Length: 457
Image (cartoon, rainbow, N blue to C red):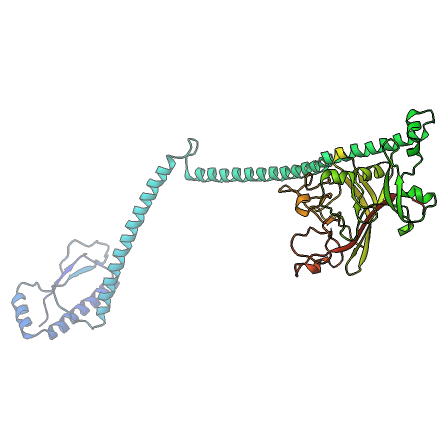
């Protein structure tokens, strides 16, 4: 049995096309209800039959009049409640709808979250604006202000860097000036004064020789004036044999005996020190080194006062001859040699090295004997701040802090261990070979002798 349908016209008239669509829909509805009723069981049919009396038949009922112009009015179909079985694929539509609803809910939550974040950002922005300077109204202005501050800091760093570079340059210039000013230290002043005193002494001595026989000093020291000043003068007088001669370097002082070497290297040498057998002890006091000690025929130190008199009036050269127990012989020659007076602590001035033994007197910056005072075990004039080099090495010498050379050390007849307090020359060939074994290099013979720089043999 077909269900009763109430078909109510929604408009009075309509177009032919709309009527055709309406008829198709009506037929589809009838077919659906027909199929649907065929699927119902008997219980369902009875219920429907009881309610059929309440359903209205299908009929056309207009809700308003159509226009006279013949305009077709569409119809509205009202279907009663019904149950329709659809193919199982229609479940996918339901699942899809549920997923759509879930996605819709998720989107709504995200929108709400974004709105909350935006509100919080606006609140923070307003809070930040409270700390901006009065002339800054927006975050953009605040960003510009930060950039300006960074730029200012960079400029300050650049200026400081340039200032540091300029300061460094000035420091180098000042350091150079200080190094130049360091040349005018007390040592150089003393050397300058000492050299002037030596020049004055030379002039005075020259004047003494020019003095006539009417001068009282000449008449009283006539015997001294007749004496040669050094061994070179004896050589000029024809003396050619080694031996002891009396000389008078300064007629105003006194005469004294010296040992003259008239055979070595052209002759005319005045010997100021000899070491050859260890017969003389060189661990002596200041006064003994001042006046001299030992035996002129064997071993001796001529004396600092005498060495000063020999070197003050003439430009003097020094020759040092050394021989070890292996019969190795070397020498060191210096074109300039001068010993100051006692007031200047017998300061040594030496330069112009040539030879085969090496320049031990100018060994290094920290071991340089040039321009050093004389030191003895009882008179400390060295540059060693922790003690007395003379006492430590048992001799008198022009110590630095302490030594690279010491020709007045203890005489050893063979190699020795311990403190290097023997005769020492730091540039002696093969000297480093004795370091691993711990033995020290001894010397068999040493001789120091001087003569005028201008000498015709």
